[in-house]
Image 1: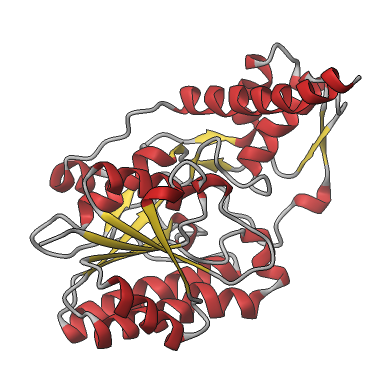
Image 2: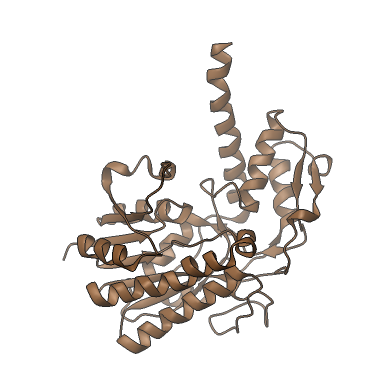
Length: 329
């Protein structure tokens, strides 16, 4: 049987890396994109000749069913969400519609159109929130600390429910923080590396950040999409924690990024209370032993390598942007 994958959120960081991986595995890859006035396919430009993009929306089940009818996928990866945690306090209802109820719309569309397809749900370490134990495993109780985290808990459990109610091959990957040069600039990791690049190029003097003491288990997005794929290759559906098993503070991320560019972060970083969360998640740390044991998965890129790659990419991007201006002058 031809391997056919449908990816929601294909224009995002994870979607682009997953599409690359699936194409190398011989899949015919379909991606769901929302109708928008602006093109949002920058991360996919090198892949567009190999992809089929379909217009649909997690707010509209009819459009999801139409996309499934056309793609007839053997695997469906739901990566779409309102995924920027700070925005979930500003838009809690919209976050719930996309990140929680949207999962139900997609699962129910899948049940009706192609119930034999295997389904992956992008769950999140933000579900653990105010952690009850450390490190966190698949059985650690959830205590989300943001509307985003709450919505992800719903999406996680509705996936479990459809698996148990209808016998669907439905998995959730509880992914801890994963970054790359393709990360959106609104996320703190990319905000840091882009800030470093702008300071290095003399475009800015300071970088304003919030809580530097928060600790996260950070990995490379390219490694994590491989775990998504592996989950859908197993004999039985299950849920898996994916992370590195190491925790690093935001301050450590900042220090490494600035040092890599030959800068002293203390001269440039300004703490701004506006960027503190209403309810903070202090520390997240994954126990991915189940994924190592059952999937044979482990991360390939270290935290330091990831930070350096992001800094290098942002510095290089600004250098390329400056060259046309230099020629024009």
